[in-house]
Length: 599
Image 1 (cartoon, rainbow, N blue to C red):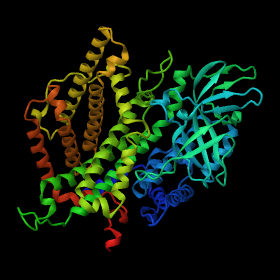
Image 2: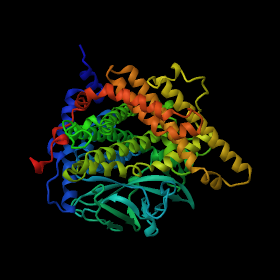
Image 3: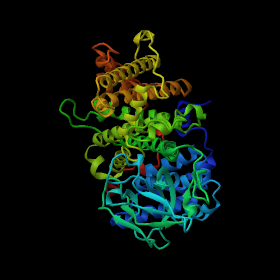
Image 4: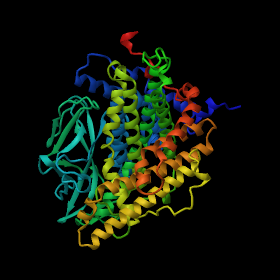
């Protein structure tokens, strides 16, 4: 008979990976990767990360297998994230943003085989050259240009000035071979033909830089320790085969052809490499939230306080600490449910993405929502939730959480970095709100009579009623404001610029509704023990949105007291089972071990 503990473990680890695959992933990221030797210089630390990446890549399943199996790739990246956040970042870039474009856009191009094999064998490490330092929203129109050279049949890649330098990139280490996926605007026949990807060797086997490539190391940083650098391309010549053309071609007569449509459609297609990134980032957010919750529980359990109200009272008897521990565990389970949702294959018509025939989906701030609106939105929501929870775990671990071990600081650095990396969260929210206001591949929730179940906040039906009502009301108000501004003669920038705060709330309400739908489904389908912990996260989420719920008239005054009472009841139910909830995470021993210098 399956016990609650077994059911929780099955929920955390998912059903799709067999024991052999899990063992192989653990071999790829062994326990020694969960600690970093002391006394390393910054270059030494970077070299260690690349050596770990090489070992992981050689021990893990083949890259093509991983990219074709999202749960397996995400499981590998989850383990890397909790072991060593810089390793996660490098691994994500290598697999999804360097190898991924070669396998996807270079499919059928036999000439890409040497580059692909060098990355698959870890003879070279992958990097991404996409964002440009001098302009915001640079993804929409990179100033780095690729021009076809009819004399050689190849291309010339050029960065016009320092403001168009590609940054950030992980290219500074002087001894590490690198292969880059370079995003550039193809200009041909006097016209911009769209944003394409080019596979370009940036450093040779000994780290030598080819002619025309200039790499400028950035100052060292401690937030997420990567060998950051800016890269400028000064008339870099690459062969025709470096163009990951995805069916496009330039004929012998110089005619350009792209079967996937005009430049706007090509932009969306080239940015279509993002979904594997988002799935991995959501999964890593869940993993480091689980690890952080486990660390906070290990810090809190059995710890006594000397507070004058009740000397020697256990720390977790105080509701603020108890709710911090249980809230972190609840966030971890909630993000685990979201990660399982995004790694489950979906039919193409459920992706909420794709170009229209007139020239591609509308994008105002960034291309991400045009690729897959809901997945991009869940990436933004998951990283924001992980950032909040990891930060709370660090604060509630007191001085030891900050000074005794680096792990919580490293997790916080990772979640902070991914507010911008992998698609800027703010821009994702704004583009989501624009699509909602314009009903661009979006249908608002229908009005409902309610709330159901007499408004019982323990009921998932009530969570969904509140979330859907808030989403519909904010959407309607945003659309009405923008339409009124446009009718009054304001241009689109002014109309939207005056409503960005409301746009953010509107997209956040949409994310809340999607997440609460995921939690309601998981609560109904999962083990009985899962229900209360997911309910606690739902109540926490509604409490954080109380101002919007009140402002939009979704709930009456007094909702905070009602939510607080429901949260306390749920915490009282969960408190005796906190250790069981954390044990289901199966965290490697180094994660929750005491500070080594005290042992």
